[in-house]
Length: 298
Image (cartoon, rainbow, N blue to C red; front, side, top):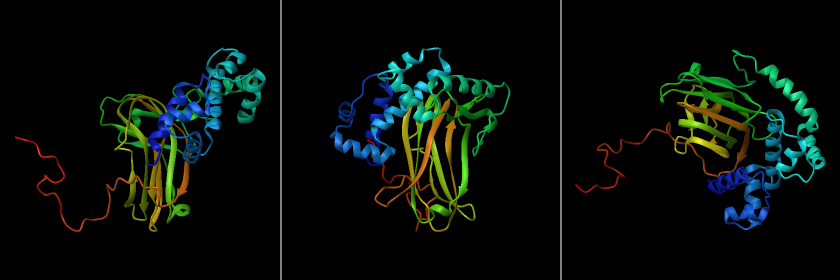
């Protein structure tokens, strides 16, 4: 996809430097584009300016610090490059609708009430599925957050086999997207992912046949990674009935996701459809398994 690797590189740079001064010039230099061209492609891909993105990420990290540390509000403000506690309070209140001190008090109580032991996590609109869902856990995380107050997570609990997997997913009617090309995006980060993790989406017809599908199997996320932006682009043919999507985790580890968005894109944007379930071929191919491979000297 156009500029995707550039956007990922820039987001990683931002994530690693949220506690340092960041300017459009030094961020754009990471992309090797002019700052004006970079500004356009970043806003087109992420849906906000890089300045807005940095501000929201700093506020998200600050909100986590308010809840999970005893640092003074002034120290948190200065650490995340706000000029004063007053400017931090104004910015924080605009996004979180509460001043930092009150947010710390109210949300700390809310989180404590949610951290009751031996309770099955419930996440509105989402359900847990997969080959071994009972070996995994999904839930809402108030500490590891990309923007806002919370993120969703999927993590292994009693997984012993790398072939096991689970997905945190949703399914909805395709009506509003029929005949369109759509882009599903979200931010994800991972910790100790042994096999792989990713996002997925599929489009089915009324008989349950798969029309379009992508599970990022050709670009999996492994190991421990910082927040980055990921996208899937699929067509929704006229016969489409259902769209399913979610995050998937194979083997052990944890994956977090935040800010899922759906948007229509034009046909100049290439799809990521894996064509695993594509149309029938006209005739059998590669029967000797020797097509399109490099010749090896014997």
